[in-house]
Length: 63
Image (tube, rainbow, N blue to C red; front, side, top):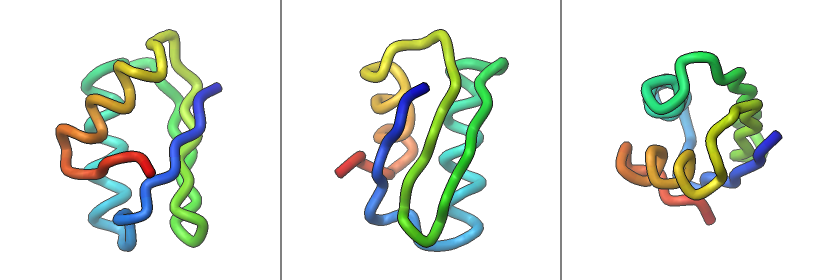
């Protein structure tokens, strides 16, 4: 289980974009997002760097 903090993730649209970016990298990933704390938990077989890069490419740099 990976956990990322995305300070610029502030709305439902952000959640959708982040989820889509992760799912494009690993379609089997289970994504849990807590918008209030800006945290994303991902159950994936990919490594942290790969998931973080996909999220960053979508415009949300982990803090």
